[in-house]
Amino acid sequence: MNTAPHYASDVLFFFDGKPDELALYQALFQLMDARFPDASVKVQKSQISFYGKHLFAAVSLRRRKGWPVHCILVTFGLSYQKSSPRIAMAVEPSPNRWTHHVPVGCAQDLDGELLSWLQEAFGFAEQK
Image 1 (cartoon, rainbow, N blue to C red):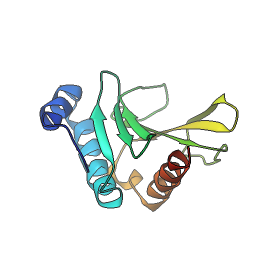
Image 2: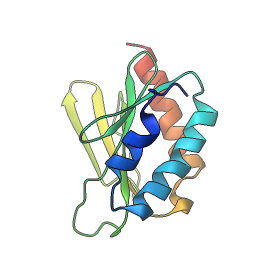
Image 3: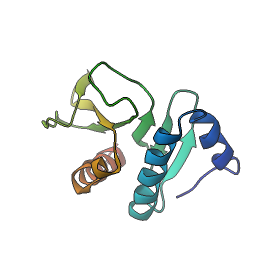
Image 4: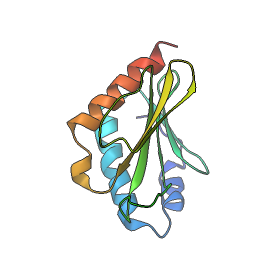
């Protein structure tokens, strides 16, 4: 995956004081790096964004009541609303563009189902 020269230090700063969340992100990054080797990743102030031609996924530290105490929030976009109990929230910010939010609280949550959603989001973003 394509990263900026200061990517490693930016990730450490992003997850400062949150070692459990950092470990979850690093595990997710390894899976995404294997699946999307030509994609790019950019650490921003409020999220870490993954791009092909366009943004297709993001990781943030947002929290809500009822979510795991230590979790990362994986966000991805599709042309339709995907239904699953794992998806904490889905919103349609514009017609036929649904943004889905999935809290990831343990390594077991980084499974084939989540990766298939990210693969689908990558394909959807590449069609723009």
